[in-house]
Image (cartoon, rainbow, N blue to C red; front, side, top):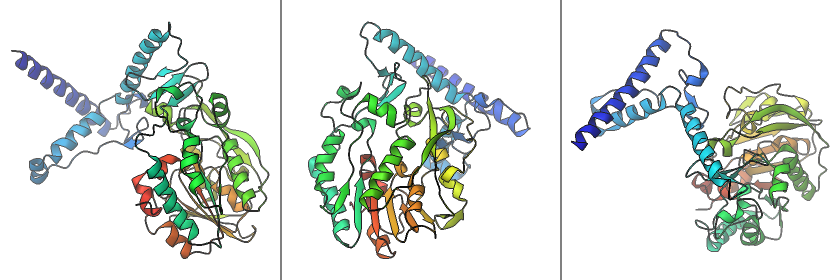
Length: 413
């Protein structure tokens, strides 16, 4: 009897889902416009940062293998009306219960929903990720990565080298959630077991972020990236090491927001004050930009030298922000400035470089930028060998060092 009731309930739910999808898709095809909050007509989830499943093509082979059924299930699940809004409202309901339960304990931060690895801190608006654990890392593993990177550095002693390891809230040593992870891998641990293992002829970054106050000033509250002012200080540190003078720049607010970034999106949390974006005004000069071999407008890099992007295509709470303003991740970017000082630099890094790579074009004739997660044509060592490179800077977080996609390009296998 129980199984019969359960089966009837499952069939009823499946029928409701199917009816909802068909009941919205048919009017959509007939030209009916639905409000954006329903999610009808969208092909991408801004909440999850991925495209929705497209309608599966029926076929005997796909049906027999089960692929058709799997894709159909994903398609129906993705196209249920108000799908993202329901997820957000459910998380908000759970968060209100967690906040109420936290009242007698007065913890500074609490999970954004039950089981979440993101934590909301009401007094600052910071959405914390869970701190890094040494689980998955080891001194031996980091030493091996350091040795492989050192091999690249030692392969050409005529080049100047610098490794910049950006802070992340996961590696901060004194925050509201720092004690949630035992055996924590903080920035000092990564510095001792990686940066200090690199050759003496490779400069390394200085730490500037230790606690909540530092992070609140230098990083976005809801996104894992650094703010433009913090990134600019990294640029100054790097070019100064290479014996060049940083370009003078001033900050201005280019996007008042608010937007909610990666930590908010993963935490299903859009409360608090959100974030704004500042950009730099400076003398950029005439530059040309190629992305994966194709010429693009220089403003693709961001608000280069006061070429302000007046607005962002912000159609959703979790769209816009860092990646949209400063461009997304690409395998290879080449910036040329024929009026800059002689010399070529190679920047090997992840998304932390996206907001400052343009600045280096004021110091070098050619700026080569490789994201090892998306560039597989050749290794970094091979790229250096086939181009006239004078200086190399690695600018990436510990996450990237541990990403499988990046390991081949960096010869970490």
